[in-house]
Image (cartoon, rainbow over all chains, first blue to last red; front, side, top):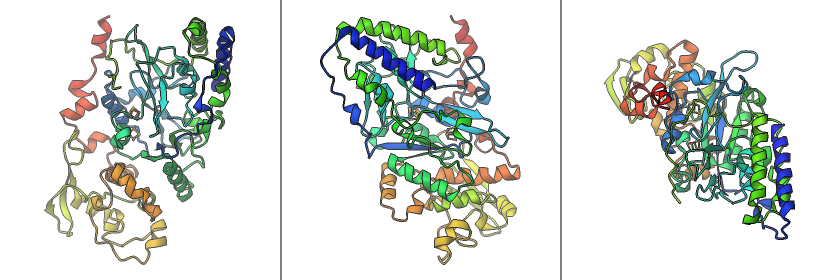
Length: 321
Length: 175
Ligand code: SF4
Ligand code: SF4
C-alpha cells in the first residue's frame, strides 16, 4: 500500500517536473528492458535458522567502517525497541546497513528473527529513480551507488519499496544516501561472500548465484514441507530480488510487505523518467518536488527512524572509486 | 542437501564436534575425551569440548556422527541413496563440512556437483552449531553464545561490548 502510494506520487511528481521544462530528448534508459544479470549473486535468508545473535550486524559495522552503535551488538534489548508510536521495529539506516528484528509468531512458538538489509533488486527502483545516475546494478548482483555523484536528493529513499536507503547528514556539502552494498567493493567483486554471510554461525544466510539460491530454496521446501511456508519471498516480488527469504510463518507476520506484486517498480516510473533530461535547468523544479516529497513522506511516517540518536559526527564512507 | 536435512530431522542429534583442531586425551569409549575447538579463535577462546561426557549422554555415536561411525547412513532422506552404502571412513566433521562453504573455489565445486542433494550441505560452523544448539534446545542445555564461547578482547571489540561498549551517555551529554 505504502509502496503504491509512493510510487504514484513519485511518478506524478517527476511527470510534473518534466512537463514544466518540456524537453524533447529521450534519455536512453537501458533499465526499461533490464531483467537482472543471470549470473548475478544472491543470498538465501532462511528465517528458520536465524537465532538472533546479531553477529551479522557486528560484521557489517566492521566491514563497512560504520560509526559505533548506540548499544553493544550483544545487547538483545534492541529487539524491544519500537518507533513511530510503537508500530515500527528497527530499520537499517546510514549508521547500520543491516538490523535483525525479533517477531513473536501468532499462536505462540519460538520467536522468529529476521535480518533486514538492501534486497538488491533485479530492477532497482532506487536506480531508476536516481536522476543523476548515482546507482549501478553490478554484474555480480549488487546495487551500489557512487557517493561522489549522489546529490542527496533522497529520491531513491522514496522510491525504494523496502524503505532501505538511509541518509547521511554528516556533511552539509556532501549529503549522501547510504545503504548495504552487498560488500561489493571489499568482497563481492573479488568473489568473496559478504561479511554478514561469513560470520553467521547458523548459516541462516546462504550465498551463491541467485539462480542456484532459487533451486536450493525450493529444494528445502520440498524436503521439509512442514518447516516452511511454500513461498520464496523475493523470487518474483517486484521483478525479483537478489536477497530472498524462506520462513516458517506467514511472511506478513514477520514484517514483509506481501502486497508488492511481481511487477518491478520500474514499470511504473520508466515512462516518466525517460522524458527527464539531465540538465541543470530543471533542477529548481525538481528540488521543489523533492521538498514536497520529503514532507509527504514524513507525513506518512515512512521516514527512516534514526534510532538511538546517532548525532555524533561520523566518518564519511571511504571513497574507493 | 541430505546431511543438512538429516541434522535437522535428527532432533536427538548431539554434538558432531570431533572435527576440531586437536584431540586432547583419549576416552575409554575409543573416542577422544576432550576436543579443542578453535576455529573462531579470532573472536573467542577455544572451546574445550568434553567429548567423553557427551558420549555418555548421547549413548550412540550415530546421534552426531551420521555417515561415519555408528550405524551408517540410516534414517530419512539419506537412506534413499545411501541405504546400501558402506560405512564411511570419515569421522571428523571438517572432512565433509567445509570451513569456507561460500568461497569462490567451493561455489565453483558445487556448480559442478552432479550429486545435487549435496550442494546445500552446511558448512563446518553451521554443522557444529546446528548439532550442538539443536540438542541443547531440546534437552535444556545451555544455548547462549557465551555459555560455550568465552569472548576475547578482539571479540569484545567486534561486538562493541565489554571495554569497547559505546559510551552512549557520555556522547549524549557532549552536545
Ligand atoms: S552484505 Fe555487506 S553491507 Fe550488506 S548487510 Fe551484509 S555486511 Fe553489510
Ligand atoms: S548472524 Fe546469522 S543467526 Fe545471527 S542474527 Fe545474523 S542471520 Fe541470524
